[in-house]
View 1 (cartoon, rainbow, N blue to C red):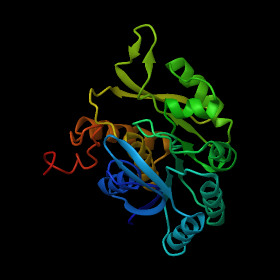
View 2: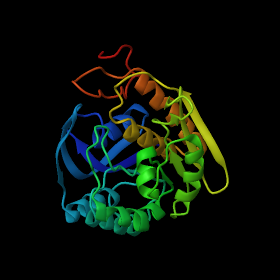
View 3: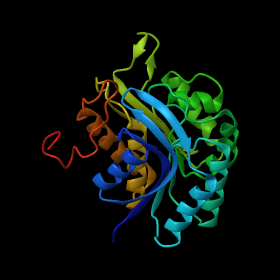
Length: 274
């Protein structure tokens, strides 16, 4: 049976992150993708130029349109930039009794642009995070959520335990910018830490030396959602998604003047650009 996954996120005109990255990921992994757009961004590889939010009422109507017609196997939530949008998403998720929720708490773009307002942070923590089966913050996002620096592997292992206390079922803390304080530079391995309230696991891969990392967080989290849609357990979904995102980065596109996008279809295309 065809599996279906829904992404609730912002649109990236550059095509490397947000809704565009999620839908590409779903397609590459054999899942039918649906979308609910929360914000429209004007951006490219060098950064975000402008952001315009969709009205909460329209966000609700998009969600209703999807769930009233199609059975969804997993949901990935990305950019939700204000409190009103978060609140309506929470209401809709509860109304439709949604399962397999992957929340990627997007707060900043890779270029440093702010994508979540201050008031929305508390609503995200109190209302949306408790509904998630897993949240997938990076180090910067975990630092904002916990209001302290999360920099080292030791910090990460402590942070995942604290983040689960916010009510989510599990946490995958992404260590793409993990620092080795002894060497005063990033580690040679890209290490992510997972915690589900009982087991603490590490997922690692060799760090890829490239500037083309635009949309990696979106792609990773949507890959997890895709594998959950297929029925894999959380630990296996993460392991498969980790392999997928590593390959996408290894085969990334060197386009634009800034951080280029990953290659979502590297496992389908014989050569980049074919």
